[in-house]
Amino acid sequence: MTSEFDIAEWARTHKACFEMTPLTEMRGSERIQVGYNVDLYALLPMDKPAGEERRAAGAEIWEKLKAVVESATKDGGAARFEIEPARVGAIMRQQNDLQPEINLRARVFHADDYFKAVTNEERDRIPAFEKRLTAIGLKPGRW
Image (cartoon, rainbow, N blue to C red; front, side):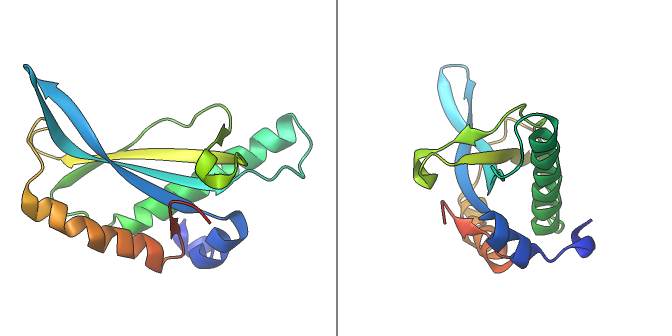
């Protein structure tokens, strides 16, 4: 799907951005970081009439975000990558002046053991992944 559209142009048009946060779990009484949450956001076009047309636009944007994150993670190595189901509605973040956005959340963790802690070497690779997202046209945090 990524070959069907210019990601950088689409990202500019839809003000696509990303955030990465630690994915943590409890192991007994200890909280450990097992991976990362990758959130992608893109503006929902409010020029579409409320109802079915706007919902269809939101679903199309979510599919594009999915193609973007799949493109950025295609050489993910030994990590497992899961995309959470699409949310029903738009979200509004203060970071983007409460403009309605479509959100896609993916979780990245060890393929062989979900509860395996993230290593320092893996943490060191995160800036490279963020650079890949930026290189294909997304902005970190907000536009």
